Amino acid sequence: MDLCVQKVLQYHGLEQGIRIKTTSNLPMASGLSSSSATSNAVVMATARLLEEEFALKPISDMELVNLAIDASLEAGVTITGAFDDATASFFGGLTITNNIKREIIHQEKMPHQNILIYMPDKETLTAQSDVNRMRLIAPWVEIAFQETLQGHIFKALTLNGILYCAALGFDSKIALDALDAGAIAAGLSGTGPSFVALVNEDNQKKVQDAWISYPGKIIATSIDNKGTEVI
Image (cartoon, rainbow, N blue to C red; front, side, top):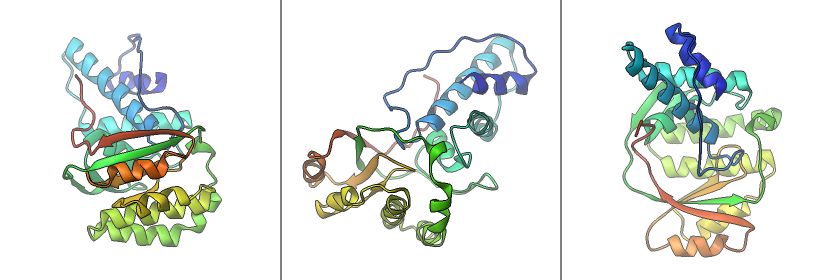
């Protein structure tokens, strides 16, 4: 968080001190992109505060995202920079990205969709994930990416989530149980340990029941198309 503030101060050439306090309903190391969400929030809040206080030219949205990513990389809380996570969190809805070039290939708002998140009673730091194991599944992850480009979002989510279960040693049965209970899509979230399932009103309870025996907690939420904003 200190680095997020420093990036904004350096961008504007300022040396002011800023005190920040963050709270979140997402636990750390849960595979739910909490670091990207928090970095975005701190960078945006800092930038808007300084711009209002000193009548500065606003930093553009993409510049804010890149400052947040630079801070995350420098802090070591991400391996790739998580441009996909950062842009999805910042803009809301669906983003398809080229992470290496930091480019958004496609962006759109998504229709309302109920989501269930299963969070086990353990943490997994993204920066400690086995990169070599993830490289092994790259050809099949590319298939999931191509499915996304063709508009098959739910199919890609499931394929990608199950692939990463295999590579990182998570139990794919959790995703399969959700699918068996009627979930539209299900799989590991990010590099784990959390799982996500997209559900309809008529099968949400069935999926919850399928997950209730696993240790941890279940969060019921929905698609967010707003993204990061100053309240």
